Image 1: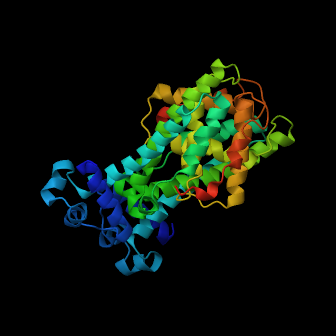
Image 2: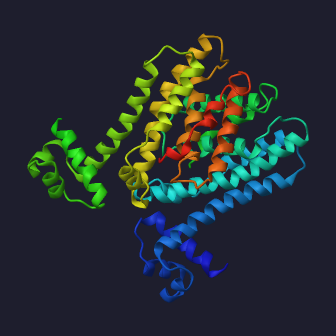
Image 3: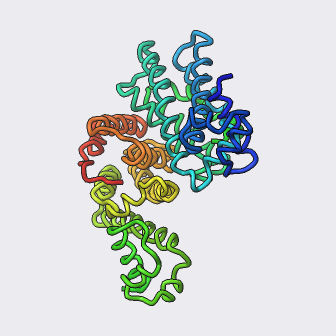
Length: 202
Length: 202
């Protein structure tokens, strides 16, 4: 493992213990000299930013891998993407950290990042669906962003506090809106509300 | 004017000058004894929260007033609502304050508040449209929330940095998705992308 990852792992371990670890403590936990830390990062904030980035990159990368595993039509790919996205979550320590009031900016940045990355993937799938003549959509990039706005903002448990039933109804409404928007048969997007959201943490 | 509003006005004035006014300075500007401030607010944070609340309440209230001005069908009401919403903006000092990194939590809270309030108003209009047999929609509350997620999150200039053209395309896509979702003629929602967004600040 490279030193950068060692430092990030140490930071993650320390987050489990407390929210205000010092650079010295991070160095000690990582088994690296304090100066070694400063070779890679200029501040603790940069380490935390990098750790959160790594966590979200892993989620995005896993989604990509799942999608490459088999040839599938666009509809099946969307279901694979959402299942992959919801079956994963950032470490609960990172999640807790992101939902602290003082970390709202970082939280907002990470929501924006995940929206951009996943909506790119989703837009490609929507374009595939149009090519397959299954979907009818003149705005695949924008439809993808609208869908991801719902997932990353409206359904974020740190921003809104919906009950499981309310979330279920929102997913049914989104499925209904998308089926009509893409002009595909009603029920095509039922996988959206069959997702087990209890595993989702951020 | 009541004392509470006097204090909030003083806070707003001070925000124009600097970001770290003290309770003493607020009291002086408001022409109230320092003790008088503590009668209404327990901290500067509470004053700021209250000021931001008041600003957003004014926007929401103005939208309600505009809607009551004339009898209109649902489609016209949606256009009135969006024009009212976009023709207003919070004071630029409050807007700047909300977009400071350290105020991201307050910003997030205010986005959530505006989503909840305006989506209630929009949902009522959607229900009117269903009663008028113009719209076809089984999920008016949720459709309204999805629309507001786009407006408050995806289109927030403090979170994403889109060009005017990109925003225009997103609004066209949203209009297209809603026309299909509500099963109304294409072009019905063209007022969405005819809005002059250059006046929107938050």
